[in-house]
Image 1 (cartoon, rainbow, N blue to C red):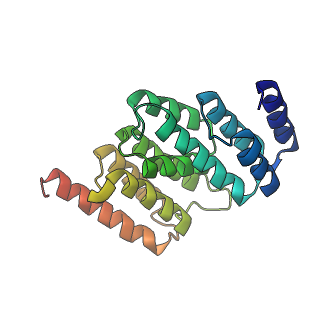
Image 2 (cartoon, rainbow, N blue to C red):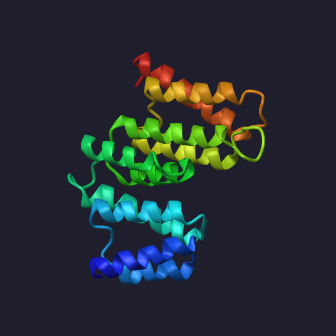
Length: 207
């Protein structure tokens, strides 16, 4: 699709502030049939997500797939996240909604063979940020939050399981402390204790 027509199409979607399953089909079929090929296109999708508060589940799935496929497979080295690409991705996602950023990062870490530690830490911090900014009342860790934290931890740890850095475990401790009196999902305690135990074993030299 010519750039001017693409810009007009995306501007129209942004002005509507709404993304439907039909819109997603158009994007998959007519706009990004070959996938997201440039950083500019990846940025367009993230900007579109911010502009459209009313979006369908199909959109979230498409955006996560498109952005993660781009950063993992189109950027070089393919399959790996370089330090430069990690810096760009983090800077780009800092302006996004925390839940959007965490979801994109989880997809990226799950697809990549290797990624810098900063992305995993940033992913955990974005989940913590969304928990503590809970607009529905007292902050608490939901089952959805636990699921996202688990995805990020295990995706980064790879086949070896959870291998936390000191910075990552500090994020989990801070989150646990700040929600100590909240009605957290029971799965949180299990994930937290296992992650901390894994970190202690790791620093003690246990294989």
